[in-house]
Amino acid sequence: MKRTLNVETIKYLKKGVKVCGWVQRKRSHGKIIFIDLRDRGGILQIIFTPKDKKLYQLAQKLKPEWVIEVTGIINRRPKGMENPKIETGKIELQPKDLKTLSQAKTLPFSVETPGYEISEKIRLKYRYLDLRRKRLRKNLEIRQKVIHFMRDFLIREGFIEVETPILTKSTPEGARDFLVPSRLQPGKFYALPQSPQQYKQMLQVAGIEKYFQIARALRDEDPRADRQAEHTQLDIEMAFTKQKDVLDLIEKLYLNLVKRLFPKKKITKIPFPRVTCKEAMRKYKTDKPDLRKDKKNPNELAFCFITDFPMFKWHEIEKEWGAMHHPFTKPQTDDLKKIKKEPEKVLAWQYDFSLNGYEIGGGSLRTTNPKILLAVFEVLGHKKQEVKKQFPHYFEAFSYGVPPHGGIATGIDRFLAVVLNEPNIREVIAFPKTGDNRDLMMGVPAEVNAKQLKESHIKILTKKKKKR
Image: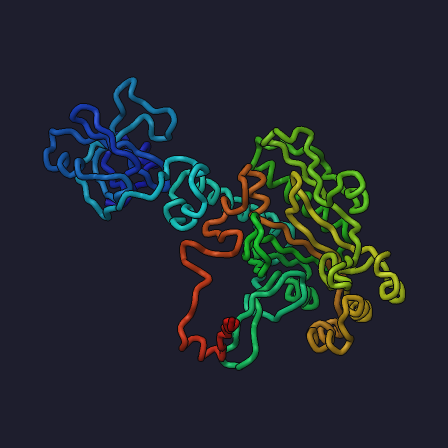
């Protein structure tokens, strides 16, 4: 007999079914044993009575979280015994056969509660158990729906989904790169991408024109409470576009997404406000303002675009200029002299996307003029020859005809955390890391054996202890 999901058993009244799942709860009322069986479809009540001695004895041995298989007949529950809180609340299973597929030790915590009351370190160590709770299951289901909606929307808008490499070249994009040693090329390294920035620009040179990707971004950042070493973003790039085109597209996407998947949510203002960085800092003292009318209302969503950022930011400690976004952002001037001599006065075609006081996206129009790109890198302290050596593919590609283009990346994890009213992004990621980038379940980062180090041409240096 083919397995039936618990939620589908309501279609099989007075008929035989086979169900499989985990023992959520075991209850005894007099001589009757009630088992609440849990699977991905929900909960189903199973009734064991002493009439079938063999089955009854087997049921007596069952414990929470054991994995079982039960075949039997679906009946209506007695009048007054219905449970309106679950989809199968009007029916129950009268078993004919019971098999224990797997036994379980006592869990380190309950999976029947939302889980907020449990130490996060314990939850992350046993994440495969933590994910059994209903709240996290629902979060993952909604995550899938959001990504599916984004894909369908952009494909209808004429975009092509393209996967870009995970092993790439180290680039100056703000955070540190994760480096991967090359076994076949001793002394050389790949880097894990902070974003698909260079590849998606190459796709514009290739004539793809409308690109998107559900991309993984990996950044070796210092410990932060609500950041992840790896996160997921919706990555978009468009040719022959202006800033308004990008912002209009994102506004249309998120308006439709909220309307379809989160109909109970109320958007504070439509169209989304578009505020300059200077105005935001003056009025709200932040470049990611929370524009909700009632900040205590969990169903209010206040989207906002922040525009006209400075092109450069001064690092006081290092006494040097850095890029506000990244070096490939297009300045709002083509005056090379002004870029080099007055970098503090140069604005960029950069824009951020915020929601309820959180930055959930950012992007820019891109520089396609090699002379301007070189000038930007000079301000950042790089020599022309050094830049050309590090990015030869850029200058070579742009010499074959490059369309004006721009894009944006919006954080899927952050958006979900906000819209689902979760305290942090770890609650919407299946297997997150701690704030200091550790995976407590897998026990990484971890040491590797000497053979692997030798094959990768790596030697571990240890600090010598100082002599007293």
